[in-house]
Length: 59
Length: 228
Image (cartoon, rainbow over all chains, first blue to last red):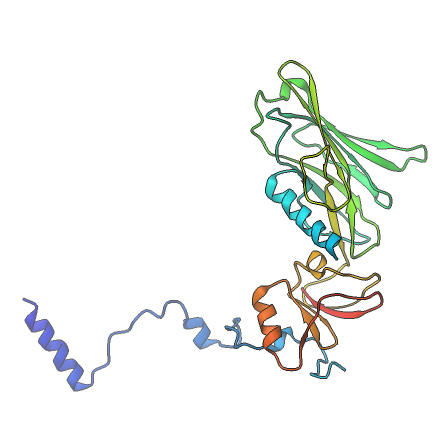
């Protein structure tokens, strides 16, 4: 019973058809509007946590 | 330094252990606001019949709210200044066992003393089954953690300067040795290129950012940027 479906799947893959959409686990808004949501830290302070007029010399 | 650490420990211990404590969070200097006392338990298994708190100097415009204990009474001195608030329950309202948590609220104006801890020494009275009374004294203002002795930690409120969400530029009027006491709800505090955060994640970012050092204490007169 499953063999025809399996065969169709193999043929689809070989023909370059797009894969079915997979749920994005809710990260869609991050990808669509990257500037509107807090991003994961990269090991350094993000710009929004630097005070007005900040310079690395502290002056 | 050690004393301030102990204050922090005592404040959080009071919350954790259900003592009589102020549970409404930091107070704002020179502002009128509500202070809520949490009564976590009675005395040795007996329900609480009365709570009496002392109003410290500098606190004005005291208004007591009616609570589960009924109407509260504000005591005043010869000049009319508020000195105490007493919540007394009717005997018929007392529970046979100590099962309930109570909130008692005041509206007060706090003094303009940011970066200080203000104590409200409090007496708690319970009625025993035989009609006798037990009293717990929440009157220790040393900042030491509970020791099971005759005095337990006094309810206290941490006074912070008025601020708004976003960046606030402040001048510190007194030395601040333990930033965690007064900046627990801030995202980050800056003095020059030194920064502090109560968040462990942000603290890691501070350590990982070139040109930024760790801020551990403030001196009187320091100018700081704080983001809430």
